[in-house]
Length: 392
Image (tube, rainbow, N blue to C red; front, side, top):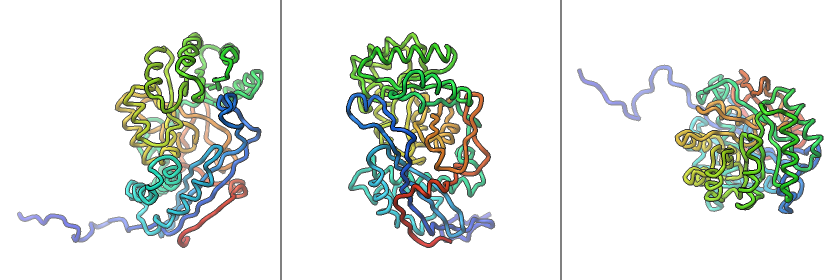
């Protein structure tokens, strides 16, 4: 029997999918105002001003066949206009591309702006496109993104951060914690890193007493301790049975994090401020974290997050992605080791849908893709817009 090898010129198999191409895209720069300015340790140490708004970069993509996807990136404080400008400059690179070729498109977009770097603002602009392409791909399959990726669970443990900032009086922190737990959230995180460590310990003791010993409790120093202070505060906090101490040191101090993680019983978590997979690799190489906290929009999108997640799993690290729960719920659900996802209600006005939270967990919906639709309020908060191509 003679067989004919397959070549690129061979006729397509019966039932082959018709090719599709990106025909149109729209970028929107949206400024989300916060209900009140918030302060963490970076404000109390004088390094930043209170945050009153968050800048979002939304990318909407449509194909010749009428498939659509939406993605976003963001910047707290400065950077939003820069992300939008970079995304606008490279937008034309997407028109005519096959939306299934997400990895190749990511590389093409990054190299289009490689002279300004392959991390940070440049790849955060690419992230909005990348997330939109993954959303489109899952919608085309008729699946929630987590199911497309291969979910390990239909819900993820969740904890609340937004009620425990340093500017909030401790009485209100307790009230906020009670409200979060009553709403179905499973854990509470509060900010620490006040210049007077005794202030942190008093607040922490009050919260632990208020919520009880069985509720997972985390703290976040937002990089404001030096190595000596982190050791002392870490030891002082051991009695509270914390789920983790987050960002005790500068985000790039891998050696310091490694020494701290080795010396404390409390797990050390970090990574949210890193802006590439390569920077996270340094953390992992130094064994600098028990819990890794990547942020998909910050490191370049879902394509890059999946690369990092595979490496983290190989090293048996726990995962607790930072912010953007609308994206990270899906990515955490697809991580083999039981993860956490961070609950923020700040983004509620941007979307028509709400994520279901009960019994300490955030639950996947049956909606395809990310399961989000931009709200009319998001449209109203749009401060800049750009379109390429022609919408089908």
